[in-house]
Length: 322
Image (cartoon, rainbow, N blue to C red; front, side, top):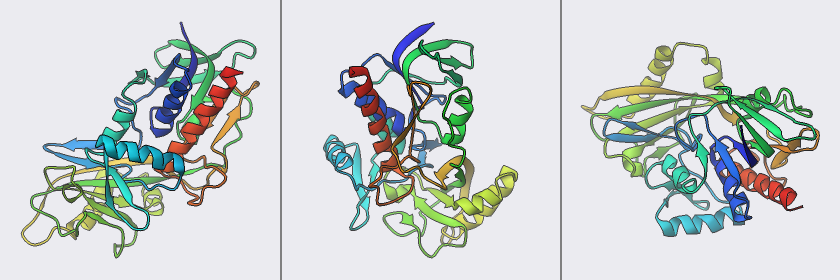
């Protein structure tokens, strides 16, 4: 049984920023536990044959001084670029959004392909994280960055977990490979004059991350919620009709796939960057649904996840330093 000062559950953007913030404060006895085979969460990129497609977050905007400072560093490092937009530029990763997550997590101690089954409060002793394989890890503090419905399942034995009102809308994303260039206008992003139920359409060839013409079609939360229990082929067939509108003459779809995000966007947000729970408040829950009080956008997004992770890391650092 191992022991860490801080255990971070979830290797998405909030978890990565919480871990980096702790390291910046001299706290290195940490571990990030991620159930997937890669960090990033909704900073997700999929390879489709010779092509590449972002199927989670497509870009991010900047409103805070903290993110603006990091963006300047990321631009200088060649990790990101300005894609489109005015007055708020839309930034995107030059190699797909998951590449940015991997760059940010490069020096962190991360345990991938590892699923947490429960979290227990040791009262006067250490907190206990149990993994699906039966292994247990003890910690002085725990930061949980999983979507709230998943977090509540893990925290069922912890006092003060009254966050049941936070619900998430799902999102279906159709991923399509075109034989030839699409008619989606440069720079490859369209979110206006689309059929009902469609949020955005993205051409990753014109976005500059794919050597082949790969297109993402994002459906709205309301559309996705109504169809969430349908068979994947049925859902993909409906989304493909949207993709076909952007083929152009003598073009065709040569590959189609479906991505199903169960927890895409919080329908209600928390007006605090994190929530402290447990008898001695040694467990912090944070993520993109936890917004700072001065957040003008008022919705879940890249920046809210980024800031929430930083705030959670700073809070734990203060506690550990006394």
